[in-house]
Image 1: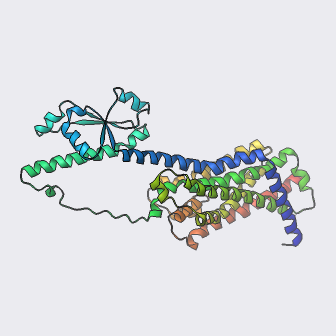
Image 2: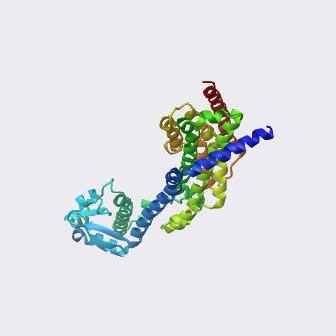
Image 3: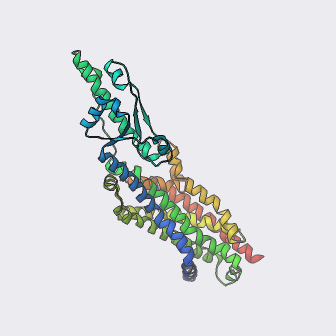
Length: 392
């Protein structure tokens, strides 16, 4: 490339970036969701987990009819649990999500049936739409399971039978996942927000520099200047990709202070996100920002108005935003073809970074090749569309 061509590209890049930064209202609407939404969701999730941990530490169980089961009361108190009486309208309050704990209901025949060797029935009442109450079910179920095992052991001991006969096999569990890999159950939301930050960062600039200028009547006069059309296209694309990466960088950086505000101690211990992850994420987003920026420009260049371009880009937004969900819906693990799909490839690679795994050239190269092909094809299409606009 000649120095004159590169100088023209640089002039266009500076002009487009300045134009984008002048629209402060649009920038605020773009930056606030992209930078704050992920950390706010992370903090809300940590608050929910912290509330569950706090309730587990309180060791409380809500019971209706505990006076019918002194044996069970004795067991619960020996487990250092505090028994709380359930309100009379517990069913209505569970359905309305104003009662946040499941209720154990004990019938009047419990103690009699237990003494006669029968199987007394208890009812564990919750509401699956009441998430906090439903989350407490497992703890109460473990308590009842412990009570059952104790009663069986006592019965067998009275008859001279060892309770170890009920469990002939000892099971040891071993989790192969590292602490960092187990933390991805929580950090899985981060790659999706970074990808959306790239998309929305590039979207406004791509639409404004093509259909926006056409609508304002400034595109045709710009094309009449003695500047190569490809230089104009590359300059506009560089500005679009640069803004997309800038928003992605801000979104990535926002998770560093966000982890300091996590309320759950266990979640804070697992959540490790620092500058190495930020740098890796930004490098992985470079091909996506390049390809998506060119694609959005190609979609918008054929639109006559800004609103029409927004509607046309809706399909791109939907496809990119839904791509990371493929990994959630596929229980068979990551498939090799994931690395060839823009958006999905970056999500897969970022998840590997969060797990602490090293990336190979074979994993990164498909995403680079696909986005490079998308970049070249779309930029050629945009330059051709601009030449046609001048010819008219």
